[in-house]
Image 1 (spheres, helix red, strand yellow):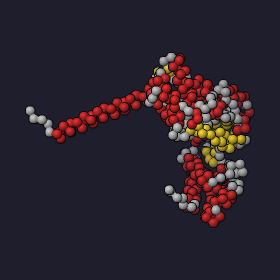
Image 2 (tube, one colour):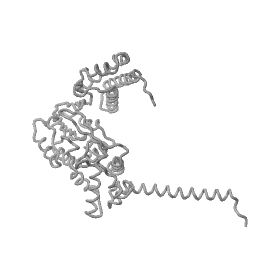
Image 3 (cartoon, helix red, strand yellow):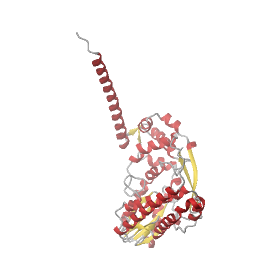
Image 4 (cartoon, one colour):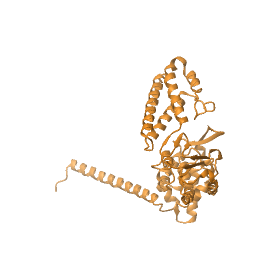
Length: 390
């Protein structure tokens, strides 16, 4: 019997390798698909199975990766004080645990329709746009939102979602997740998981508020710590008991109001530089004033940077009469900060133009402002000394 040629044997061997590789690849694909299916359907878990599905490793290995010392801390100024930000380096084990938990499990959970922040398909515009055309408005703010959410609240609300074989397994898994997403027993401002966890903690609160609002034909949306109410018939300012009821509902989750940020509106309301009126969303006069001031200043002074120097440029910038930024308290400390301020306004205006809630004339005005800002950003880049890329 004739033996197969060496080339044929090599081809057969290669084909076998390909078959095995495809089988392994298909197995991994099916396993991954099964993992996502189980996580989306909130299947019955053990702590070990959850850890394997989310992090691809054992419970003990996940536990060893939790190090609160990985957190960095800095403070940013805010009205009346400072806000502490705790953030993780992207190379840290805890950051990776949080990101995998966020992407593979947390973002897949259903949220009430009133939630407009940190939710796929929603943004600040959708938070505002549902109130266009209303007669009466009420805006309230939750004080110290993230730090007010305790690990006990996180575990309590997650226990309504996570299903385990028995109570002991459930407590073990909830303790693990609680340790991963909290710092000193509270949600840290700056952790990637905090926004979505806060939405899950607020879910029952949102449902209670929505049901209460439906009784009075009131529209309700929430974006993080901002709660917005509107109605064509319900005058919030003359019916203060409505606010007391909302306060009572929030208190059940140990949350309180920031009374300095309560705003009432009739026919229109201004929020963070946006104006909601009877038929549109637009920028407030103060916000437009600031944008025009900064564009004009940049156009006139950037060409002088090489002659007057960066320090003198920043000194002049910090004397601008801006209305939305107190330059005495929050001055521009670097040219990078100034440049980021311009880029921030560009992104801000682009997000406005992308909505269908604006009148055509106002959209065109914003597009002109965007082009002017882009021109000044380019001018600023050209005026700065060339940096050594090494």
